[in-house]
Every structure is written in structure tokens, then in C-alpha cells.
Image 1: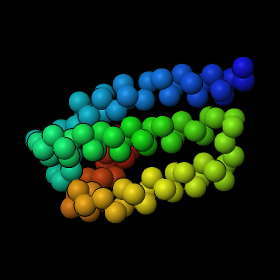
Image 2: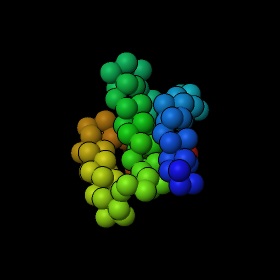
Image 3: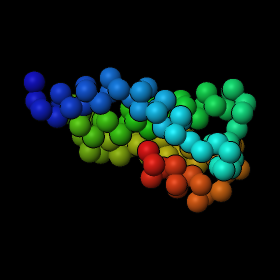
Length: 102
């Protein structure tokens, strides 16, 4: 098995853990918008979105996906987040902060 393929599987197996760790690290009291919500539906959705980010990011190590396919799949995720109502109501600096934390 190719080294990157092993890394890909190693990371993919841990994507939910990465998402849960990220969510637990959020400073919900001093944050705004989607990251400060107490609504279980919003929380579930933001976790799903974060998890999807990890899944798509891990594809960079997948030997079965070309860089063009990777870009297309990642662009799809970016477009979906950019149209998400909760993210649209969140200040961009807060979104960027959480992106860099991730």
C-alpha cells in the first residue's frame, strides 16, 4: 500500500474525532453566529460541515483522485458553506478564525 494511501486512511478514520475535538475547543461564549448557537440543529449542521471539510481535505492524500477532482470537490464544499444561512450571519473574521483553527 502506498504511503499516502495509508495516511489517507489513517486520517479518514479520525475525521469525526477531529470534528468533535474542534467543536469542543470552540469558545462558544465569546464567539458569534453559527459557532455560538445553542440550537441542536445548527450544532449538528456545523459539525456535519466541519466533518465534510475533513473528508474532502483528506482526499489530497488519496491516490485515486486527481488534483483536478480534488479541486472540484473542495470547491463544492466551499460553495455550499458560502451559501449557508448560518455562515452568512456570522462575521467573516470569526469564520476565518475557525477555519485556521481547523
